[in-house]
Structure formats: structure tokens, C-alpha cells
Length: 272
Ligand code: DGL
Image 1 (cartoon, helix red, strand yellow):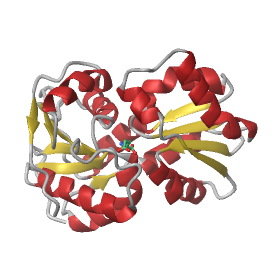
Image 2 (image 1 turned 30 degrees about the horizontal axis):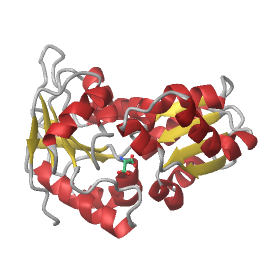
Image 3 (image 1 turned 45 degrees about the vertical axis):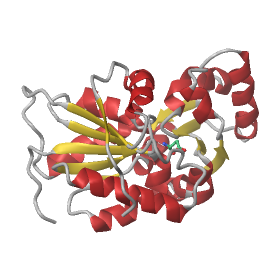
């Protein structure tokens, strides 16, 4: 692997706005680092698409970011992490991190009973990636998955509380709660926005795992290993790119990033 310069940025991509929850944690943990974020808003959602299509889209996003002087790439999208991580790790000459292994690791650290629930997009749940990763770390763990596709539009519409979303959450979580899980992985970029209502329905005995925090720790670890951490007194720049609808991204993005996005630039993410 060519040694990337410590002055490169951290590249982060997602199918759209959701990965800003991961980007936010990285920015909070590493304020000195510059980040270039790409949301593939022209082709969102990835969660209902086939593995081949997601790999193609993810490859195009990674190629675009790799032309922006990045030293490390974070695949913030759970679906792209499930399907495309290995391909991207083989293609790029820089470290490429996903969100699944950090989330699985955090779940294993949280759980005492080894009965772990995972919620995510259809793609993530059908891929079985969390189950396989958790069981590699903890072979006796029992993993219960449930696809919750309606959570993404609810989060994007800002419907994060109230009786309707509570009913939807209850319906989706029913079988997992019947299975007596003690830990629940929020295996989708959007679910941290619904954390409050998910926690209320799941009950205080179920611990929620948000892979964004663990992913940020992973970024620190990998930058350290490659001697690429910038001095803490620097102030990183944040650049936001999208493949469609920059204005809508800017409005919605503030909720996911936790603060306003100063500027959002349109880019042409060609299919590689
Ligand atoms: N970012 C996706 C994920 O975390 C959710 C939205 C989508 O389906 O594209 O899997």
C-alpha cells in the first residue's frame, strides 16, 4: 500500500444523508481532520437494491472520493459496508473502513446474554453480515435480525416521535423483544434519529448500539497505526458533496450532522 500523506482528508460516503450521523461522530472525535463527505442522493436508497448494484454504486463513490486527496475512506452506509467493503479494500491503495465490524464489536461488548438483535435495511439483514461478524467474535451468540425499511422515510420526514412511529417501531421490534434480546444494533445510518422511540419501545433492559461511535474510534485507531493523525491544534475543513438535490440535502443534513452544513456541492458520480 502506498503511504498516504497525513495531510489528506478523511473520505466518507453514504447513499445519502444518513451517513452524516457517522460523519458527525468522526468530526467530533477528530476536529483537526478535514472530511470530504459524499452522499449519493441521485441513487438513494441502497437498502432495497441488489448486491451487484450496490457494489457498482459504491465503487463509483469511492473512485470519486479517491480523486480528492483522501488518506482513509469510511463506508458510512451499512448496506454498502455489507456488500462492497471487500471490493473497495481491494481496489483502493488507502485504508477502507466500514461500519459493520465496529457495530458488531460494540454489540458483543454490550451484551451479557449473547442474545443480540440487529435492525437494518433489507439488504443488510438479508446479507446476514452482522450475524456472521458477531458470531466470528462470539461463536455462541444468538443473533436475531429484522429489516425495518419504513424507518428511513420516517427519519427523513422528521417523524421521530408520536403514536404512529411508536406503533411502527413496536410492530418491527415485536419478534426481537419476544426473543429476549439484551442488545440491539442500530444497523442503519438513519436509526440513531429514532433512538429515543426505539429505546422507549425496547425497554431499559435492552442496550442500543450505534455503530457511528465505534466507527469513529476505529478511524482514530487506523490513523494512529498509519501515523496519519494530525496535530490537535489544527482545524479541519468539512466538504459536502452530493449527486443530486444539494438544497434538500443541506436542509435535512443539519438534523443528521447536528449543525448546519455551510455549503453543499453537486458532483457527477458516474458509474465506473
Ligand atoms: N444508508 C443506508 C444504510 O445505512 C440507509 C438508506 C438506504 O437504504 O440507502 O444501510
